[in-house]
Length: 304
Length: 329
Image 1 (cartoon, each protein chain N blue to C red):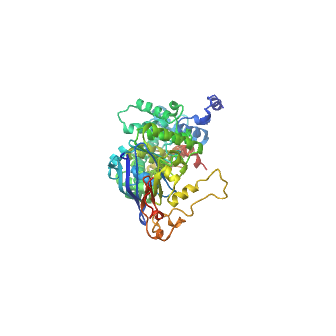
Image 2 (image 1 turned 90 degrees about the vertical axis):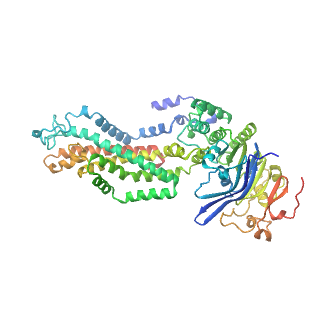
Image 3 (image 1 turned 180 degrees about the horizontal axis):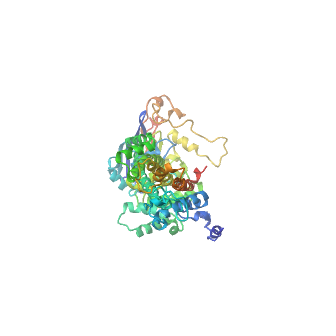
């Protein structure tokens, strides 16, 4: 309601420029935020994501115990006021480990997706803009990568590089490259036919500048959406690799690894599996809701 | 004699396709003198736009071939390096397009796009000076509240306003030639007149020559001094505006002029030239217009006519005038 009051107070636009008040908003990004704000599910997702980001940043202050603080006499304690989420088979506090685990999962999610976005969009832009044999080579490369089931490819990469969190991250980055590459390529193919690209050429702009200044910003919307959704999959993939023992190594409190280590005690101490599992689910849900919301906000016409 | 600022000689633009080389513009020659407004008229698909893109060096290099000479102040642009062409584009020859709604990048403000254009060719200019120039230019093209406008985004402007911005962007580096590719086609009739008026004014004030590409003879009558009529990639008639309107010689030109609806008469049907422009690649032998021409005789179907001078100010490519002596006007 306050918004409407604010809008009506704006001075009336001149008759020649029939701008209605709503069009007074300046940047297209402000517009996106307005639409995003209206979407309750997306806001909830963004809230979840922010919550986990805060957990990760302030883990040292939030976690009551260290993530490798072992008290063997306290093993497999059920949730209590002392250990909110109980303890695992080494007597480590699961709540603390889940909190520290947020750091690892988010780190893997953000960094691997950042890597895929940079490499993928770079290749995609070049393929889309220059076309012809450049496009053929890059597109076939994407096709080859996509021909493997993604988790199998990740396992192959980790098998080659050796199991560690860092290598898992690289593997996840590699398997996501073609997704971004193809997305950006197809976007570039449509944008480069736009008249403002010809207009930019007609004022004497260089190819490089057109790519970075006109084509890239205009293909940003799908990259942002896909990026958010890809963080969710990356977190699941990292957990899967951790579960298979190909990712983080003990005592790193990686959520997938925690699941794997506790799976033998699922009957006696279900909390050892439950809480890391819930953490994975909530983070992924958060990113997915946020990604869907961003898609609707960035391209309102796509909303079904 | 005045040396033309742009002299296009036997321009031939072809595209490589699966069916072989496709010639879209076939030996087109024309010239523009400094400060002159030349119209290129023709139906859709007759090669007007490709001609203008060829002059700008904007036809895709990998899939096409440009032959002939494009002499800009004596320099052959058809042979120029890409680097040189970038200097020419915007700075010496600028261009505006048909669709003002899509010719501006939707993500940047009007000001930033204008400033980008200025600083591209004048790198020494500070941001502040560029901004000042942008505001001055917006005022010059008749946009009110220019100071606010530079902070607005393209979607906040109407089509006519955007076309004014495009003109401002094109004129900001004081080009010698402005190529206008159907600049008024996508606009309301009332706005069309305003834009033409603006272009006329800028042409008089700055001595920038204008190459007006259009299918609208009204636009030609309004603003041009000379006209080139194109059909199927070839020049079929060329002359001053008066000569063409007073004495259209080529049957195609006649047809075009007849096709303009006359508001004073109530007709059952509007006149139209039967048939379509032939597709490049399947051009008829002989005169390309012959299949649609009501005056066509046997020779027209066999031999290609040449461009014959009817007078100092008019040339026509038609067998009907084969025997006619050059009349002295």
